[in-house]
Image (cartoon, rainbow, N blue to C red; front, side):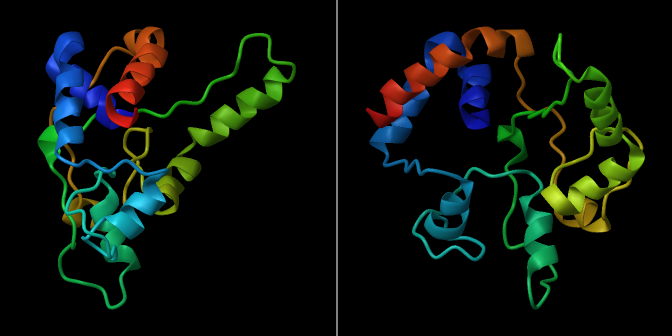
Length: 173
């Protein structure tokens, strides 16, 4: 989804589908999920596939170093920082939730320093809580895009289903 949203942010409503048409005519491969793309189709890292590029996270290079045995001195993968989309994952208590008090406790726990400090090495994502330290490998081998693509959340919410349908028609049908 983030890759599609980045192309919409870059090319606008009128041009993003042309970009995907070009990718399709160039032989882009779309698979069922990240695991398959990264570990099977991708030729970098541990992948044995024939695809030199894969859509992943800016935090993938640190994971490559942390999980490697033996540990390399540099990450075997990199990040194209000018192509990144700011992906924000949220948590909230739904209006009229039947157990709102416990839901709020869960949200409070998820934004706690303890939970946020554990996220980087568990999920290989950056913490949402400002001032939370991340493992040194994130700074050494990762990349933090200075100006990632973004779209207003309300615009995404209003257009997401239509965009996905258009993307599916353009790329998969």
